[in-house]
Image (cartoon, rainbow, N blue to C red):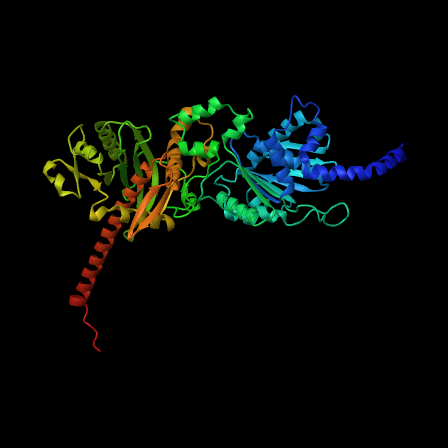
Length: 555
């Protein structure tokens, strides 16, 4: 019986080799051959195209929308490669190991439900909360690796990367941890390397992000290789692909487009596969901003430390009642360093939509009390003057405020007015927009401002919280995420000696950013005043000793 089977295989071996060679270039045809029910499962044209691209090019990059089965196709390609290349070791990674395990397990089980013969190829199956590993009868292995230092020393012959746009992926971890995993090529059954095999294949599947991100730099690298005839291929598609094949509801897409609660720039990225922002003349590099997001906790009131001061900075919406035009309040915490400068931490952000000036003034006075603010920096351009007109009046139990840098408001000062408002007017010499922009760019480049960590990072640390409490705690982190979106949507332009800031997409506002740079500019002016005072004090001390206490040394 055994000899009969061996003889039979020897007789069919030439045909078997032809089929294997065919399936290594046309893996979709292998799916057609083993598919038990073409009515229940059938590959779409674009899915066939993606599978063929993955098998024919060493470096592949797919920017696809939610609902386009990108993870399903990636896992399916990995499983097929494991079957067709004996003893190959393939790895999949995602921003978090648990996420990678969940993505792999869900899609593997879905694939098995459609194509049960593929499950028979597995000798060992290991599904855990943060780990997935398949060992095939031919010795191939498919497993999950972490995007962290713990993966150093691991080995694989190929890699698939899921959602490379996530903040946990950066150039350092990608190049020093993930790529070295593929140090060795697969050894074929003949005992050497297969000259027809694509060694160290890398597949990236992701939604779109920002042009300042590391993910976009990888995309550009692959595009460059593709344009120069190397073994690389990139492909992208918006929601039209998924809706055209019935994988996404067009009504659902239209609802998202019209929803005032869905960020339009996020929609373009997640459902349009459009990379946002500008890679050239970017105001701030994305990685620079991410590295500055180190603060764990937001603050809703002043801490009990007399050395700590708070600066509140407020940008007034250009048009009241416009849902996209928001007034924004940024809270900057200052800790003196001892040399006249401060550590600068953005510990909270608030926004308002279409709120009357009187209501805004009442809220601002409440926040001034909560944080025992040193100063309230207010955008006095255009509509901002109307807000200042309310703040200098006695509209509640709090005393009226005084504008400290504009003599035109001196006539409104009363005996109980508190010197609290610093008015920013972009056309004035002392607070012109170009200087404000230049300072912001300089301080961000020098890592002088710290921000709250992302919502996802904060949420991972907040356990056993009810939904309402969790939403309340995460709100400042979400606001900082939105601030990041605004900054990534800005680019600078030089006009002579003046720096101008322009929005790449007009659909996303820059209210939080404006409030932030106004507040930081006041801090800069304060540090300059402190520096001048310190120099005057040192001069007085020197004069005292040189003039009275110590004789000049004779030559």
